[in-house]
Amino acid sequence: MSRTPFVVGNWKMNMTKRSALDLADGISRGAPKGVQVGVAPPFVYIDAVVGELAGTAVAVGAQDCYFEKSGAFTGEVSVEMLKDVGASFCLTGHSERRHVLHESPDLIGRKAHAVYDGGLTVIHCVGEKLDERDAGQTLTVVENQLDELDPKRIDDPNRLVIAYEPVWAIGTGRTATPEFAEEAHGFIKSLLDRPVIYGGSVKPENAGDLLSQPSIDGALVGGASLEPDSFAAICSAASTS
Ligand code: PGA
Image (cartoon, rainbow, N blue to C red; front, side):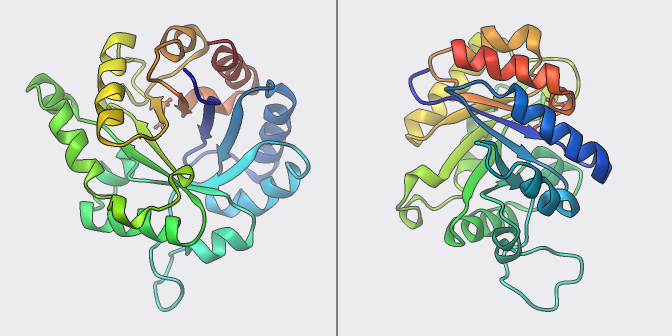
């Protein structure tokens, strides 16, 4: 890994306001030097977590957004609103948005470009389902999901990160082997020269092996990011690999 590693905690639909603030505090204390650390709390806690982390190097972002700037879109949250409360990045295309909330590739692409055009960093998530992996379609699926982005419209490559998250590894305890993940990351980098972080059951026990792969630039962590010691151990593994 040659770039500054980037380790992001995706808190999903978890936490209360109190536990979110405690977790943010624990994470900022455990964040090692030499690693860029980010957290993505649920929308309603972003403002408070930004306040809690003020003066620390931990970035705060969102798990989702809507692509319109404002208007009659009941329940949605715009990139402008995220910026207003201090978010600096936003996930797009997370597998739960794709496969549980049934977002279309077109909607995901619009969201990714809205995040970028709004001045935030996009963490665009890609990854194949189990049947796609078994059919040998991993790279085709990933390439199609990268096509949701129009590289011509991204002139500041520092605000685009790709997260490779095989769907069969998310929240299942199954992790891609370091070799399998490395192949997918290498393929993504051959298409797009951007940092590529790995997600899918990253834990302190497997973080070192994954993060020491040359094309793995960090981690997107779900379950293990809800516990400050586990998350700190993953960040430390990133700092030493
Ligand atoms: P997990 O989630 O670490 O719990 O597998 C990763 C993610 O969904 O980003």
